[in-house]
Image (tube, rainbow, N blue to C red; front, side):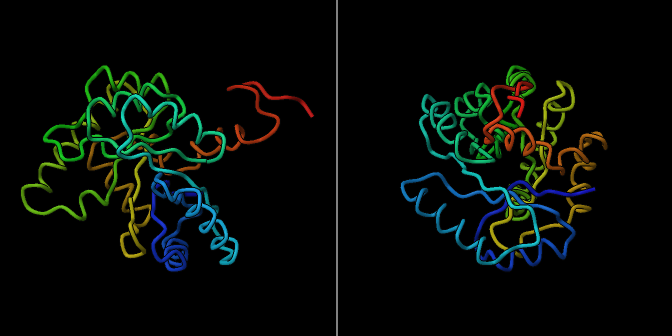
Length: 232
């Protein structure tokens, strides 16, 4: 099986690519912030990847953060035409809901950010299932938390996992790596999924290229709509 970590940063990219391959990853989703320097940073990243010639399947994406909830859908639609992965940074309940209402969103990251609850309810879990927006479970959130905050994050993750499982919402498990030493192996992220009580077949799918396959079709000239493509 080919394993994909769909949410890593681009800091010290050469080392990230080297270590990811050693850990057993087949592909990475490299996500950069969507801000005023996004276009320039994306072009720089593309050139760096081309120079490094990684022996990994690389998908590029943007993380929408700090955007007014009402603008999330418009921003995601614009980015959908250019990128393989679109991530919305969660935490605010309205932003969480808007992200899950938007089919162009691929991943809702840390919906529980700075909260004492999962940042989700049954209505939002149903929206995630309907619009195929994956809820992210990030190892990085646990790694950089301490004492009571780490305990709270684990409770939030367990609460989110319970809703995901009950309503069959899609999810992804990622390292959320900021740099090379934050990366974790596929077996470690699989173990996190099991600790959260997520089903094994879905854990396996969450570490695959599943999300990327449809998105790459969308970026091709043959794609018309989900399930419809122009014959050659």
